[in-house]
Length: 408
Image (tube, rainbow, N blue to C red; front, side, top):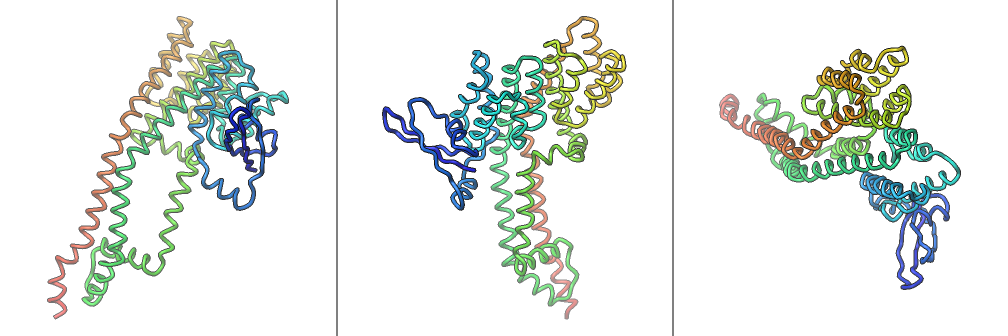
């Protein structure tokens, strides 16, 4: 339920309006970030107004996650109580959904629940691997560091997405114009071509037939065009769930450039978490179990679970890594070498952190080159569209003379 909170400053009488997605007026006040120098009035937003508000409200969960976790890290570093730390984040986030979550998590914490359990209830905003990381912070007593890591990781993801969006503006505009040209031609030029070629009773190239079929669909059943558009919208809207499906993750590992980025991303998160837990003297089998939960890719989840099973069976950590090194890709042997050195020198956490840092640096470099990777794909798509149009239109023209002579 959406609630509108009107806050009035008792000194200046200045009013501010905030929308909070929660169930009670008390939670709405917490989510709105009410201060002692403000009076508050809460009203429900229902019916059509609620639907319009939800459709038009800001949808920036990634930016809000960055603000929330960075703010929590700063507060906990200064020994501010966890419940107050959560309440202080209400004015840092921008969406009604996150304001409501802050209020509800704060209430659950007041009732004695663990933070990971309280945040787990909001699975649409906090993924299982994120909850596992928070659990790791609770187990190790290093929640501020975990929050900093999450905030930093989410910030990098936000930066990559912004670069992707900015890099896609030019190709998006050009491709949209190209599609517009195809649709315009389908309504104007292609019907005339269809009448001419039908009267000549001659065989047409496959590309021309495709354009004629597309033109007929637009003229007689234009609503069918909405199906692929809706499919694309749903695909991007549910990308988070789709990317966690096992077949999709298997496909990632088969793609030339993507596979390297996926492996390094999953390994960096896993090794950083494992180093954190070992450094906090968490039992090794428990540390590996928690690390497996934080892994967002199924293959690395499987790797850490198998290593844990080997450890429980009496195998040393370097040997367990070596047995399952095939799950780590091309860098498997190198990582096993690091673990052998760690076993001899007693510097496991330093070497695990070193691996994670190297992978994170490589991912940052790749993120800065995203726009350069998009450009060749744009050229290929545009070249294919232009080539298809030219061939579909001009190929029958070149054989028009033969068709007319044959007709005579």
